[in-house]
Length: 73
Image 1 (spheres, rainbow, N blue to C red):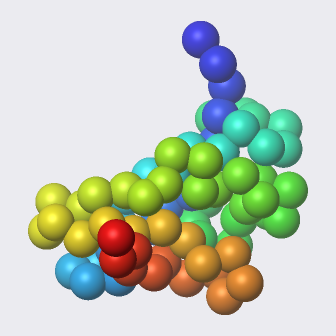
Image 2: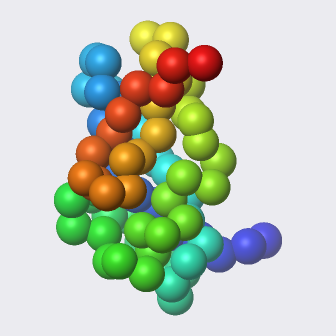
């Protein structure tokens, strides 16, 4: 089993929190909030994006602002 850390990201539409996995950094199976996750971990936060929220919104993390953003296909 691979090691990873989780960044908790709120859906930009309904606010439901989703766990984004990152394999960057030391990977201690830790959970981080979007606004305070370490920079080395943050660089890989979109590796499985976009996520689909239960409300139907596709979203990912805008790396420049550290905020969740809706994805329009």
